[in-house]
Amino acid sequence: MPHWVEPGVLFHIRIRLEREKEQRTLTHPALGQAILDSAKFYEAKMRWHITLFLLMPDHVHALLSFPRDKSMSEVIRNWKRFHTRVNHAIWQEEYFDHRLRADEGGTQLSAKMNYIRQNPVAAGLCATAEDWPWVID
Image 1: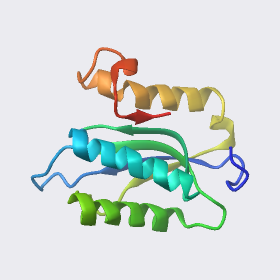
Image 2: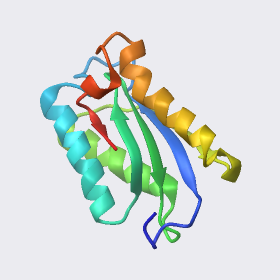
Image 3: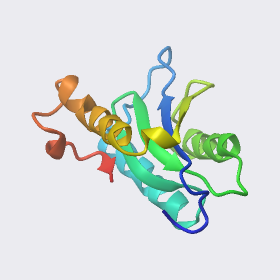
Image 4: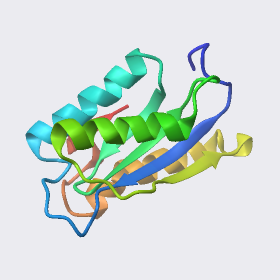
């Protein structure tokens, strides 16, 4: 964990596209690459730290930590706003977040990571988690 992140604070974040709007999937090659690039950019700028970041066609799963001096809501809102403006992604207004408790740091963290990595397999999008290209880990 980088020094600028509060130790032990990890969030499971899920951000969905607006289902009622016709739009490209997040795994469309140009959009998917732009989203992954922006996630890496946010990490490089210390807006968040990525433990796992995975794109599905209509949503993002991420295990993220945030700097002590940044609002998670503001960081995510700005990230979504950027993709709305630049890539015309239309997101659901809210997002799901779950703070992993300290006791979730070991086996529970492994289970959560496995669940996220297996999402594309469970959806029939690839044969194995290792085949899925839309991931940062």
